[in-house]
Image 1 (cartoon, helix red, strand yellow):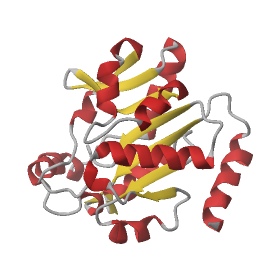
Image 2 (tube, helix red, strand yellow; image 1 turned 30 degrees about the horizontal axis):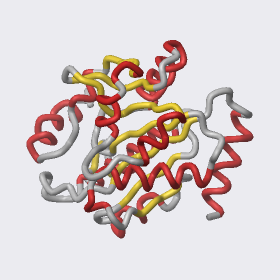
Image 3 (cartoon, helix red, strand yellow; image 1 turned 60 degrees about the horizontal axis):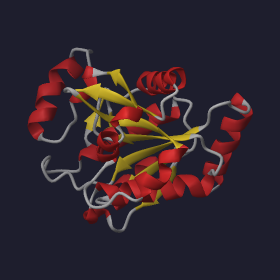
Length: 220
């Protein structure tokens, strides 16, 4: 707990009061059935995918950062012990992504009730970066719409930024309905940001094999 509190203070003292405050929920609870092994632990650039995604979040203006764990939590949690994030373990992760999103949002709000927005992200998009987060925030602020979402493969998806007015709706999602369900329902409220590089998520060994050459050449 001491590490987490120190992280909060450093964010506040380093940046002062920010005019727009948003937290980040990183969903990392899945069982990686199609991958055949925990993809959160796959090493990318010398570090596990989950650690890389967390460091991306911490390099942005997002605070707090909540990581939702479920399957293989006992293997993943130790990797995050020295990072200033809040870990939320979802005991009902098998119910689907909605339960993990709900768990993450509840944890986020319990530590900070003065947030203007939440950014929802996945652990398995290797092109996820602090720059992507910055683009989504800038798009929302300039458009005035209540949602900013990455657009790839012809549709809006995560990562996506939701203003507070959508918190209750996000928390009410059920089953395997993730944030994309809300993006479809509220299409008129969405500012899309073209980020075609995010189309690749590492769900299967084939996905990883297709992306690996770019990583090894320095393009990943």
